Image (cartoon, rainbow, N blue to C red):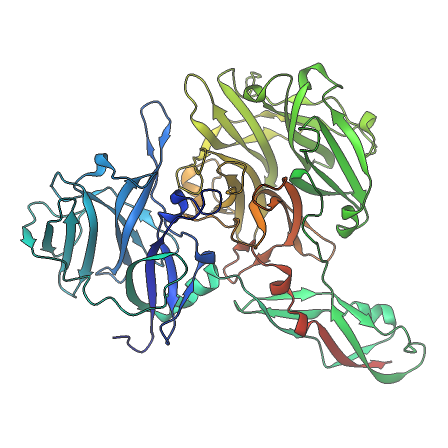
Length: 603
């Protein structure tokens, strides 16, 4: 029975699709959908997973991927939520290391989850499914084991180590908690878990955070008094969105035939300005970055067209102008012996009024790739190769290489906060074992930005299924400043059709070198499901235009097997200040709401 002020949420997993579309590692995760009054459901996060099991770290530092099945969502005694699930191997088979145990998570809001130690049922057989309910006084936990036998126990509360000691286990003839499943119109591919009632404010927050907002209204002052056409051009519209936010946008007013040289009143129409970018904006260009330097915009990216042997840049007065701008070669593998092969992931960064390009390079094979920094000479022209200094390899604070012959470093990014200069990068140990790519952070000397001033600190490992799909990789970090938080997006999994974007965030006044200051979201922020036809979205960067709008430059594939190519999309900020990366042009500006009008009085 649904009470007033409550909504129902469906918890489920999915059947896997083709491996390069929606692999088992992605399908074996907890998904959520809102249940509508008519029994239909609205899947959240593009019908993609929201809760994933963490990988287990082996003694040699490598990660062993884990997944989950049969999730069960329930209310806790304190009003929060619990989730139990069966932990399985990445291929969906039984996890023998978790025999007789269950995954256990708690959550305040169904957006972020804490994974606790495995619930030990004190039994040896693998669990195939489980359910739990709290009746206001006690919890009842039921489960089925691989031999088909069912069991039940009851207890007052969860302890620090999970289930209380000496619980009484009763063998039963079946599951009573799972009887009477509601009749629901399940989302595509859903494998039913259970449905639970949640407060409306929890459901509303899920809707806001896990559904892409859409433009629902555009407003301008109904009466405007100006003295010139130029003054009218400065009048902006307020674009309103379904998540309760609004954005100030420029209007392209159509008033050239009106006489602004004499007093008068007339009605003027205009269209909300929208820079439109048909994907891709640059073919065979991956890891794109747009920078702004001395009034000009510049575009640079990894050049997949020549197998990563050159870096070209484009220059324009506006971001849209970069789409058709001519390219100029500034670096290739013939210029310097220490960069004779594989130039990757270039980024523009301005440090103390000097322009730099951070990039990776090596004279050898992929397993030798390392971070480098290249500075623009004083009064140099960014479009001229001769005006860039020789790239310098990044070193630690003692002057030794950032990483030794055991592995590689790449994708270094930089930002300044509170007078301190930080870098984050991806580092991968190959020898003696391949540990996968992990993210690190450190501070640098702003006068020598290729030199660290603190020891590297581990920020993130590819512990979730979306981050270790096909390979264990966290890479491509880039900072985005919010009003009260710093966001660090990063890319994960193999650089194929399943590449995704994850999110770390921290308070602006936090100690960024303390890993506990950072919060990692359990689900990706951007994926192949964000926009139909764009696969393997990732390795993005951000740029703010002259109107104050933030843009996301990213790469994706036009088709599962298409070439990595660059795209541009506006970054929206939700009511809690978190970035939204899946706002397509049609959602950003509803075509039927694009036109506005106002009565204009010339004074």
